Length: 299
Image (cartoon, rainbow, N blue to C red; front, side, top):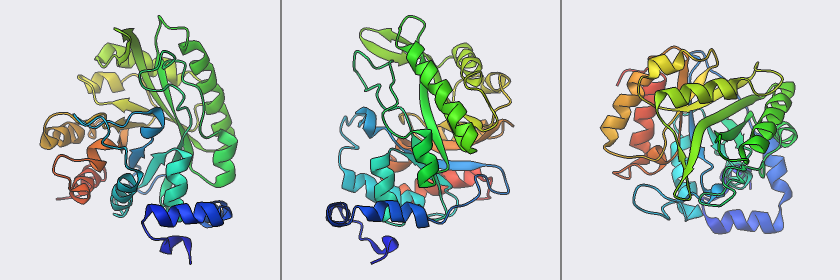
């Protein structure tokens, strides 16, 4: 049985993990890769790294992403169209997908720091607990992503910044994409809140852009905030916009994305829950809309 023929069942994947775990490394070694960016210089990446931080909620359901079988089914559907360029995830999710053959000809971006568990007292001390740059290179992945929350009142920010800077330099040495997701953040009532106003976003961009000993392969992953044209004047780094926790009507979300994608430094989207768990449940339709917006195809 080839990796591409693996059935989309929890039992099938578990059986391989029990009896033939070496097939995971083999699947990565033989995976068909692609150029980082296509002819239009734009990317649509599906994000699936939330569960590793214990962040399982979507809208009002705190355990929407709890079923790995359902998540994998939705991911396979989302990755099928040619307009979807790749996926962002942790090793457990990406190993499942590579066994299923869903990463053929797609970008695979590894999520690196998942130690800042949602709601933990140490959430802002966001340790690197998943991929390393060396592991990404060895397995043939295409880049690494790091969440870099900056809280001026929390000492956990310092080691997070240092670890992010180290990872950016290591990824650059391998020629791999370093995707930085920065936020100015603060703790209120025991919870971390990301500051999503334009000025805070601009400040986070400048801090994140200066991390590491090379910016040659650095991309930013930023929220869609107000006054985005002014915000994007803060950087020359190519930027992908994140979908965030979906709120409100889907058509309003798509309208915001469409406008944001007209700003020159913005080169695409990294979207997870908004595509994997759309309000109407139609993953294929949500992905089709996002792909057309990113790659500027006619409806």
